[in-house]
Length: 200
Image 1 (spheres, rainbow, N blue to C red):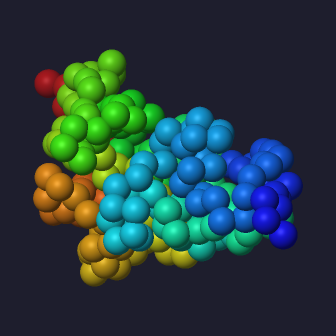
Image 2: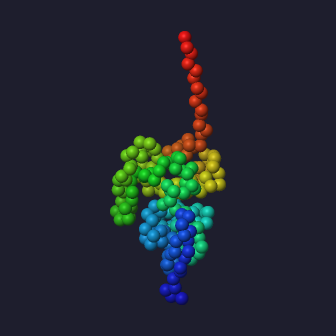
Image 3: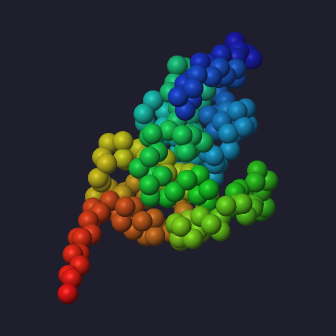
């Protein structure tokens, strides 16, 4: 039927919401425009860059490729709940809290590319977690992909981490930096041996 709309009940970041939209509306538009959740970013719009990754019923998907009719009774997790959900705990340990990018991307674009604006917490965060995301555009996709990886394996090997990052387009080519930071977080913490003071 022309103009037929869906009334969807969705569990989004562990909270139930209702969405009224056309069956072919993309999930990325529902999130960013209808719900005004800007954490999930749109890059290539053809499912190849990984910027819009979300978890749909426990499976990692590109939000730019998911039509609304696939969201009936869906369970969604997006990067917008990064600071709240237990799911993201292993990734927060690596990259820190949500002031995680060198800047925030405005909706306007310049020559087809998002416009970078300085993030208010970028300086203090870069001191605590140095060198991970030079521009920050891919960070939401990286964190979603790694969260999905940690769901199945809390101690992945280097090759698994590398394969996970391979699906994310990073314009700054910071793959090795991210990989090293992830692998470094998986190393066992060495207990410092207590030194006994000798009295003379």
